Structures are given as C-alpha cells and as structure tokens.
Image 1 (cartoon, chains in turn brown, red):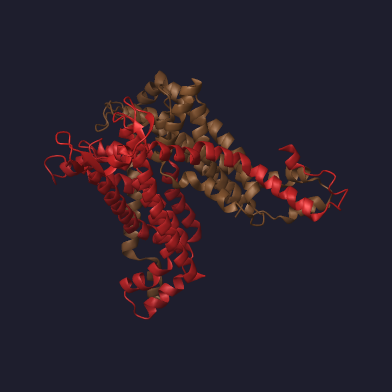
Image 2 (cartoon, chains in turn red, yellow):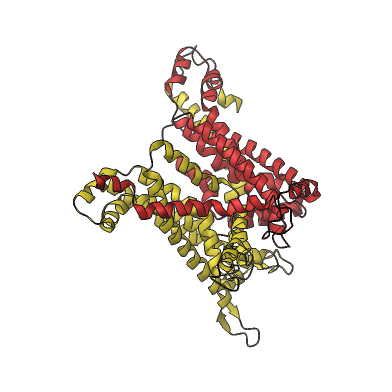
Length: 266
Length: 317
C-alpha cells in the first residue's frame, strides 16, 4: 500500500514543482510590490505609496498609449471574432471538403510563423501602402492585430461548435424554422459562450502584443507595451511597475472570466 | 452574405429542391463563410511573407528600402562578407555566432523547460481533480500575461541591484554583485521563465491520460524509480514531451523581446539581428533573407514535430 501511495508523491518531483511555482510567481510579486514603493528605486523599499500610479495617470504619453491600446484591442478583437465565428461555421461540423486543410493551415498560420517575421513582413508591405496612399493612421495596427487574433478567437468558438448537439438545429428545421431563423434562435445562442471566450482571448492577445506592433506602428503610435519597451532603455522608475501591474490585473481578470465561461460547459 | 445565410426560405415549402442544388448551396455557403478569414489572412499574414521572399532577392536602397533590381547580395550577406580592404570572401563570423547562439540558447531553453516542466506536470496530474484545476490555472495565468512584463519582472530579479544579488551579498555568499544581466545565461533564464507554461500545458495534457495503475504495477514488480520513469512514464507521455518541446523551441528561436531586454543589445539572437537590418543597418534585403532563414528553421522543426507526432499516433492508435 505504501508503494501505491508513493506513485502520487514522487518526493523529488513535488519539491521541483513547488519551487517552479514559486519561481514563476516571485518575480511578478516583486514587480507588483515595487509599484507601491514610495521611493523612486526598484531596489530600495521606502514605504507604501500610490505615487507611481498617480504619475502614470498624469503622464500624457501613457494616457495616449492607453487609449490607443484599447482602441486597437477592441477593434481587432471585434473584427477577429466576427471573422473567426464565420470561419468556424464554415469549417466545423461539415463533411471534409477539398480545401478544408488549406483553410485550417491559413487560420493557424499566425501561430506558426515567428512574430518577428510577421512584423517584418507587415513593415515591408505597409511601407509600400503608406507611400502609395499617404495614410498613416491606426488601420495598419488594427489590420495586423486582427490577423494574429483570428486563430485565438477561432479555437474556442470551434471547440464550442464541435461540442454542440446538431440535432437541435435539425429539430428547429423540422419545426419549419428557416435556416436563418434556426441559426439566429438556436445555433447562435448556443455558440455564444464560445464567441465571448474567443473575443476575450483575442482582446488579451492584442493588448499584450509588442513585437508586431513595434514593426507596424507609424512614428508616435506607441501602444502601452511598445511604450514600456521604449522606456526600458532609459532609467526605469516604479512608474513602469505601476503600468505593468494594471496590465497584469486586466489580463488576470479577463483570463479568470474566460475560465469561468468555458468551465460551465464541462 | 444574406443570400448565403438564407439559401432558401422557401426550402421547407418546396422540399423537392434536388439534392444536387442543395449540395451546391452548402458548398457556396461554406466558402462565403470562410472568405473573410481567407482574405484577411492572405492580405495581412500569409501574403506579406511572399513579399519578404521577393525583397530578399532585391538590392538594398541607400537609406533603407530596396531598389527594384534583382540581386543575391542579401542572401550572400547572410553568411558571407567581403573584406573591406582586399575584397576577398570571408565567412561572416558575427552572423554565424548569432545563428549559433540562437540555436544553442533555444535548445538549452527547451531542455531546461523540459527538466523543470516534467516534474511540474507530473505534480499537477497527480493532484485530486478539484486541486488539479487550481494548479493548472496557476500555470495558465502567466501564459496569458504580457511577455514583456514577465521579462521585465525577471530583469528586476537578476539585475546587479536585483533581488538575487541582494540576497547573495546579504548572506555574504558573494562580495560583489554577480553580473548575470546581458549574458547568454540571462537570456536563457528569461526564455525559460517566459516559455515554461508552454511546456507544462501539453505535458500535463499527456500525463492526465496516463494510467497511474501502470506506474503502480511497475513499482510492485520492483522497478526502481528511474526504471519506472524511463520504461513506463516517459514512453507514455512522449507526445506531450514532443509537443511541449516544439512549443518552447519555436518561439525561442524567433525570440526578440527577451534577448533585447535581458541581452541588452550585446548578446543578439536572430530576431534582434533581423530588426537591426530594418533599423540602423538599413539593409532590407539582408533582413528579408535572414527572416526567410528563420522561417525555414522553424519549418524544419515543425516537420520534425509532425513526423514525431505521427509516429507516436501510430503507436497508440
């Protein structure tokens, strides 16, 4: 009996695992803690204060970058979710057809190509477009973010569709619902949790992106992450920690909700 | 779209629409639904890669950009250089060193993630069902949080005045702070830190399916712990090992943020070299050729993965 017990308690494994969890969170805890530092050092604790949150709040560059981040993330996640929902309907619960594999490959392509390569590729293409049209606005960022958000929005929607009982739509059709009515009143409400989950993942992915944004943005178009990357070159104050903490909190909140939304199903 | 979404409101009234027509409509609807995704991804993801391929065969413009004439100078410059004085061909040592560092650090990061991630995944898989979700959630949270922020958090730990050095000097283990930042080691540590969840999640997915009675049986038959590990656990979770390794290896190879922040521009990896060509280097064709080279390395890794996954699939099928 003692032996069977041991299987679950490989003692060395447990120690390593616990150490890994500590190592995973300790740096982030330090980062959050120093955002409340009264002093301007990242090494010396001088008491609790919200000073750096105030500084970040009043910093115009941070304000602009925040608004830009939110505009891009909302636009990109809405667009990506709409596109991904349609694609999920076109690729899930259908008999295998010619070209299906190619569509899968295309949808998952942004996950396989290194971000730096995608960033460079968009830089090159958008440089041509910018010169031809003279337009330097936010659309480039939104277009790029939408593209790499599509697979993240697609996966939960597809998972939800696959788990759905197709007999429900058949029943609706038997009751003389038109295909559109069946979709509107049966399919769409059923797949809605998947759509919400997909939109949330897309939003987080867009909000956190550094590399592709860094290459696509025109001058003066910093988002919060690229603003932070630029700041890391200079003398770093806990202001960066304060911004990081807020971004972390948003991601953690959204991912927690995502877990709750998707958990219900199982 | 509307004509596709409602192919026939009259369909129920006229059930004799022939099967062939129905099938044709279904096909058309599928493609109309897929069309936005296909167009968007071709325009803003896949298509631009072809432009990069084209650019790698053009001549460099004087101030960045390209001149529209065919040239293999970009590809040539990936590994070779001409001596400024006597115009002889030499291997481009700096680039070779960066290629080597990228591959070396990616392999080491993958191994470190595997060594640490394996016990972690095993630990999670052996918890009770309720606790398992909590531990899994703790792994997933960092996975979805900003990579730059996590890299920055690691930066604060390994700086000269960072937590690790404060502890070391405080305990009197070292007199001077250890220079960890801006070394290969700091990049590897940072990448291991940020990509760790990518190893644990697929490993866990495999271990969750592991029948622990097999492990118990092996113990009962007096196998040592190492024998159980090598003979029972590792073969059964090998799909997870392969998937986790590829998920860590590929982003490591193309890493840009972590080496930039923790390598400080001194210890470049491929991603930083590529950026340099599009920034100060002003050699777009070389940058394009380097990008395609990186993409090729990733494809080789993916093909290896697909082969390994198929082999594993057959074994379990």
